[in-house]
Image (cartoon, rainbow, N blue to C red; front, top):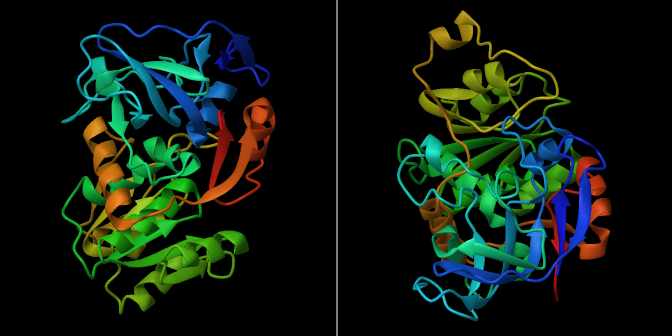
Length: 339
């Protein structure tokens, strides 16, 4: 089998193709034939060495992927051959709160899904609806779960409330789709014409161009009759946090989802902005297997389709990374591993 491994994490040419025999699953493990894998921002940060958690040298890249179970260990009971599955971002975090001893991540500290065959413990897998295409199925693990947790991890989100999203990245696109699924009104902020078009296509009620409206928080308040957004999915901080606070309703929620900026920056909110606010600011970072399973159920029940930007073949993996780094399209960058 072929796998792409990070032989030199932190080096731009550190991703290398390896050949090996397919592994055999242990008693509680599952052998998965991977059909597709998808890139996230964290994968670019891991490759460049700017990710907060150091990658293990030689680790198989990418947290996101989907495939078919082809063999199981003798003690496996959660899945069976023929099931379509995806892996959980934190393979040992099944539910509840994340604890330090459960912090291993696919494609970083343990082998990920950029491989023709992967072995994962049965507890790290979620079963997918077979109606979902491989590219779509490979897109849920990181961005999909992060967006879901942003909307569901705090105070209950109620139909008729307003959700504000920033940018047209993968998390924001999922957040728009999930917010509409919850019956919410969605306002999006974007500086990209292509991004604005796609945000509208997936359900944003209003898209504010921040290039034309730098003080976009005032426009959010105007669109909400002065009330502000009930929940802000804050993916562009720290630079945007002041505007997000100003755009939030009195008892609203601001969910911080960014990983790391291009340059170190402090989180600064002026006294003026926060003095008139009782908003809650909380941090989310992807989620557990239970959160992934909730996303899978929601996608299957509502027929939601993740936005795919461009697909590459397995041999084109270096080009897929370059395309992702260049932010060439809106939507997931997917690598087809098998047909």
